[in-house]
Length: 557
Image (cartoon, rainbow, N blue to C red; front, side):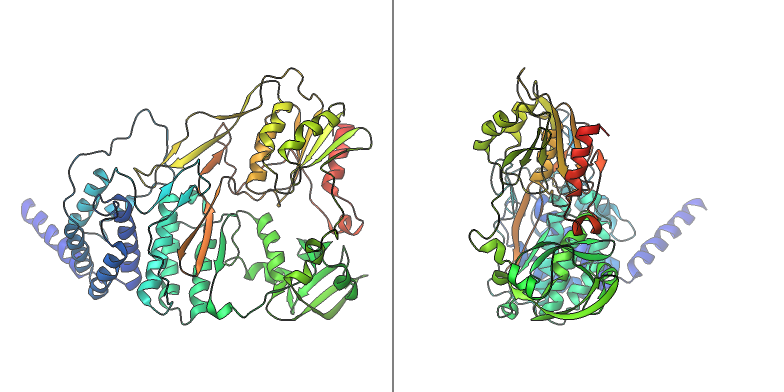
C-alpha cells in the first residue's frame, strides 16, 4: 500500500510540474540567469569559442514557445546538451590556502525544484562543479591596470536599434550578469538583484520608444545603490539638444535648495542670485516632491550623496528658462529665470584667472595648519610638512578629490607602518566568489620625527572614492579626529565600460574594508564629530565644518 501511495505521489508531482503555466517574465528571468551562468562557467562557452549572443537569440525563440515549466526546462536541457561535453574533473572544492568572501555568491536558484526539472538542475550543478578554469574570454580583471575590470570581446552592435526586441533583452541580460558576478557590493543592495531582474523585464519588453528604453537602463543601474554608478546616453535623438544650467552651485538642506557658490558672477547678479539664496520650488514642484520622484533615477550609495547629485539634476534641463520659488525675508516670491549653456553658466570655472587662486597649504590663526587636499600634489608634501611641522594641529581638508598624496603624507604622520585597509577581488575561476587580497595594506614608515600635533580630517558628501580611501589611510595615524558629515560611500576603483552602443556606465569593481572587516561601501567614512552645513551658516558665509574643527583643536571638545 505504501509503495502504491508513493507511486501515485510521484506521478501526481510530475504531472503537476508538467502542467504548471509559466509567465513571460518568469521564462526570461530564468533564461537570463542560465545564459549568464553558462557564459562564465561552461568550459565550451567561457573560452569564447561560441557566438554567445547568437546562441541567446536562437534560444529565445524556443523559450517564447514554451508554455509550461516542463516544456521550458526541456528547451534549456537540450540547449545545454548541444554545447558539447563537459569533462568531469570536480574542482568545486575551495582552496584551503585562500581566504574567500562569499556574500555575493548566489547559485541557489539552480536547485529551484518549483521551477526547474531535476534533470536541468543536475546539468547546471555539473557545470558548476566542473566549471571553466582557463582565461575568461568575456571578462578581464587586473588590479594593477588602469582599466581594472573590463568586459572586452563583446559585440558592440554599431547598428544597435532599440526597436529590436532581442537586442533590448541582450542589453538587460549582459548588464544584469555583469553585476551578478562582478560587482563586489551586490549583497548590500536595498533590493535583491533577483527581484530587480523580475521587475525590470517588463520595462524592457514594453518600451514604446527610445526614451523608454534608456529610462529602463537608467533605472536598472540605480538599483546598485553605488555612488560610483554613472549613466551616459549617446543617442541620435539627443544630439541636437543642449543641456542648460543654473549659474550657481547649490545644496539641499531641510528640503530647500540653497546657493553655496556662484559659477557665473554677472549672470547670477542679473537675476539677484547670491550665496545663501533659498529656493523652495522648481517649476511648481516642492523640493520634497523632487526628492521623492527622482529616487529611481539617480544612483547613490546613501542619502547624503543622493541629495548632492539631485541638486545638479533639479537645476538643469533642456529648456531656456525655469520657474523658481524663492524664500526671501520670510516671503515666497516666484520668478522665471534663465538657464544657460555649460560654458556660460560655469564661467567662473572656465574663464582663466576668474577664480581666486587657492593656497595648497597655509598657517591659520593660533598656529594651526590647513591643507587643501584637492590641489596638494605629491611634490608639494615635503614643503607642506616643513612649513607646518611646528603647528599644534594640521587640518587636512578632504571635501574634494585628492591628488594621490595619502601615502606620502602618511610617512610624516606615523612613527611606524600601520595597517589600514583590506581588499577583495573577484575570483574569475569561480565567478561570483571573491578572494581577500593577500595581506593588509599598510601606510607610513619608521619615523621617530613624525608629526606629533593633532591631525584633523574634514569630510562630507563630496568625499568619494579616493577621497574616502585617503581618509582611511590618514586615519591610521596617531591623534587623528575626523570631523564633518557622511561621505559618498563608494570606496574602491571605478570601472567604466560600454554595455552596448549608446550606453556607457560604471560601478565600483573591488571591495574595500578596514582591517577589522568593517565596511565603507554605502556607509562611508564615519566622522568622530558630526557637523553639517546649515542655511544660516551659508548665509553668514561660515564654513561650519572648519569652524567645528578649530573649536575642537582649541577645546578638545
